[in-house]
Image (cartoon, rainbow, N blue to C red; front, side, top):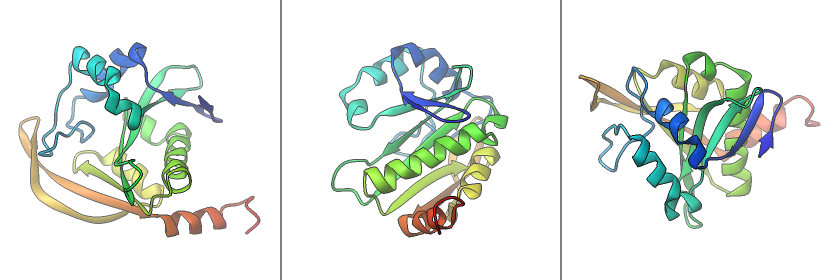
Length: 186
């Protein structure tokens, strides 16, 4: 467990299944659980339990973000984290829209960037969101990600077609941000 100023981050376990179902099934469509065809999936409690037991999750762990009170508020994972990959894909979601604008979310994203660029030596992090995920988009932009482009009406979810936006952050940008951060000696 990594404890920050505004919360904690830890690996997900079976006790988190109910909270993950809540995160994965919001009132608006989210890109959090795309299948290989980029279709939005709506996992059940049993689906989540099965995923948490899978060997694949041991290679690509899912992380839970808790607030100061220990309540589960969000989750994230880095897909494509095998040894030969030069990039990882960020999957991130929080329960409430306000959570995306919180210091807790910023701390979690900083940890994700450190994990990808320092621990796994990736060159790039990709993130995808639907056009209806304004809060996630805001967190990405606030954290230095840049819009690479979007596909119009690429994903049908919750009764309508949604644009699929792709964002990226390169290691060079991360290093420049870290060098310019207060207290780093730069």
